[in-house]
Image (tube, rainbow, N blue to C red; front, top):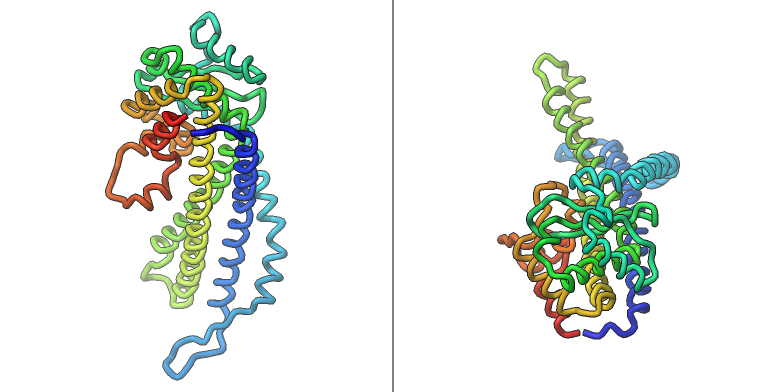
Length: 336
């Protein structure tokens, strides 16, 4: 595998990722318009045809007018939500994996490897965290120089030699250098927003069915309850569609970034075979499985769930995977 023209590849990948990220607000606003159009369509009727079916119609002018009125509120709410989640994400990740900072005196070997690699590529020294886990894994996180962090498990430190560990750390430092961590956190926050909206709509729909259909209610009240249920159902469908597209976008961003990080890590440590060997060891016993947060697992050098197999066809397996095939990553590194 040739890494000539690495800068051009990074630029092209960054451009594609930015375009993908711009799709998140577009998907959200598209779901809002679709929801409002569906409500307008089912709320407008010219009466009933000869078979007793309602003749509904869509008033696009009314939908567009209402959409323009609600857009500032939607964007404002999402922006506020995004800012809060964006700047608290680093501390939330550290708390979720139960990581502790690692100083030079705690493990001079690891600290020196990180320091030497950062000096070689001219980047500031990130914080180094360690998770007490006998299995192997590592990830990078953070949104700026104050929060950039490389997190490793104790099993990784104990079972990899210096060259293999340098390859893994070089991979994670490349994620930081390429702004991958900032990009992935951005996509994770957007997916989280839409996922939360979808969950709330499902709960509201459930409550409408459970508490809104008692026998003691009058016909008009039952009709109102049914109308609310229809509105909520439309909202759930719209949110589900938006969530699916944002999820696929997030996965696509992650897969592209892993190949680039492998290439950069191999170049930084100067030994692609060592990184290939490390990936082979990690895939045999991936750690951090107990965290229970798939959004965080997306940042691992190897996602534990990606190795569990299953009955899903190869196409859908690749489509919904956050990481490319480990075998493919190793094969490309061994061709260096």
